[in-house]
Amino acid sequence: MVNKIALEAKSIFKSFYDPVKIDVLKDISFNIKRGEFVSVTGKSGCGKSTLLYILSTMDSDYTGELIIDNELMSGKTEKQLALVRNERIGFVFQFHYLLNEFSVLKNVMLPGFKLNKFSEELLENNAYDLLKKLGIEKLAKKMAYQISGGEKQRVAIARAMINDPLILMCDEPTGNLDSKNTEIVFDIFNELVNTFNKALLIVTHDQNFAKNTHRTIVMEDGRILK
Ligand SMILES: Nc1ncnc2c1ncn2[C@@H]1O[C@H](COP(=O)(O)OP(=O)(O)OP(=O)(O)O)[C@@H](O)[C@H]1O
Image (tube, rainbow, N blue to C red):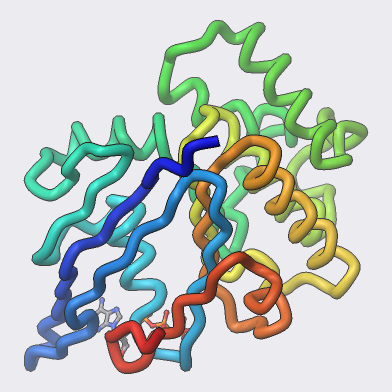
């Protein structure tokens, strides 16, 4: 299988003004290929989340170039970026942000409604299949508030996958999981990369987790160390 580049960051710089200028990202360049599982580690405050927000196109206030699936993101309008996000990027936040007033199945389907590309029936089937793949199809009809933290994390992964994205990005996906659930999530990620050829970028403090990914990017004070 040819390993195509899924995402490329070229010389990304980012500063906050709070009220004085703080340079948070300083010349970040790297790429992620399809079928590659990459972790980003580094001490608290080194800029990991800031980088993830830029790479996922949620923050467009930076200098440098971001290329996703051979397309330059820098300079696109918010509307164009929203479409790229919805079509090509799945995002899993540390705190799942499921909607409690909806069932597990509906939560997984929601980004699909937003993209409006598939019929409701197809979305429902796909959502159910994803839940099955993640071993939680029995929870489909439960309300989001009725399930455990580890289950919520798996639902959040299913939701991020519903539009069949090219890249999955996760901020501390195992931050509040026990070792059994961490292992389950790790196996799911491996399958996404190895079987489905997705590109995976994970921000984590868990050195054990990082050690088992294909490649670790270590950040220090807004730069990549290695
Ligand atoms: N909106 C903001 N305004 C001003 N400074 C910010 C803002 N967001 C982040 N920062 C600063 O940018 C730096 C990097 O923050 P970031 O959240 O990216 O770090 P991190 O490596 O993800 O940390 P952690 O591991 O604790 O989540 C920190 O010094 C933080 O205080």
